[in-house]
Image (tube, rainbow, N blue to C red; front, top):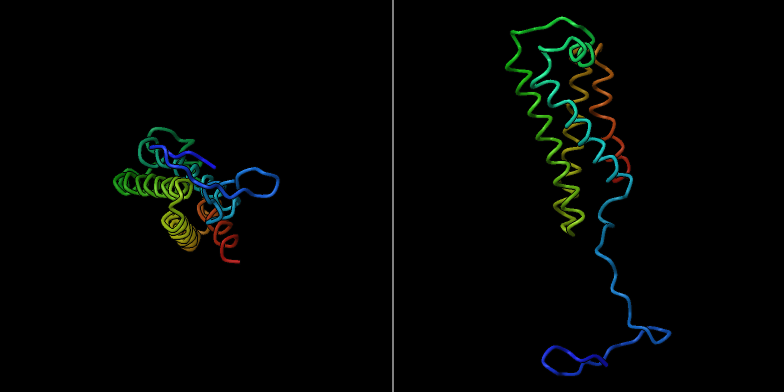
Length: 155
C-alpha cells in the first residue's frame, strides 16, 4: 500500500519478490544507438566545416587546401561560401535538435529530423562528388554518417 498526497491510500501491485514493479526508463528505442552516435558525428563534421567556409577560407591557405584541394583563393564566390557555411551550421543544429528530441522522449520528431537530415547530407555529398570528383573526400565526409544512419535504421 502507498499513501498518496492528501492522505488517501493506494494499493500497489508488487512484482515478484515483493518489490514494486520498476518503471521503465524513458524510451530511447526510437533509434538505434549507432544511429545516434553517427548523428552526433554528422553534426560535428558540419559544425567544424561551418567557420572554415564562412569565415576562414580567404584568410588561410590550409583551409582552402583542406576544403578544395587547392590553395588558390576565389574571392568571386565569397558570398556563396559564406552562405554554404551557414547551411552546414543549420544542418548540424537540426541534427542536434533531433538527438535532443529523441532524449526528451519526442521520438517521432527526433527520428524524423535525423532521418531527413541524413538523406539531405547524403544528397549533398552525392552532388559534391558529381560536380567535382576531385572533392570526393569532402563528399564522403558529408555523406558517410548519413549513409550509416539510414542503413542502420532502414535495414
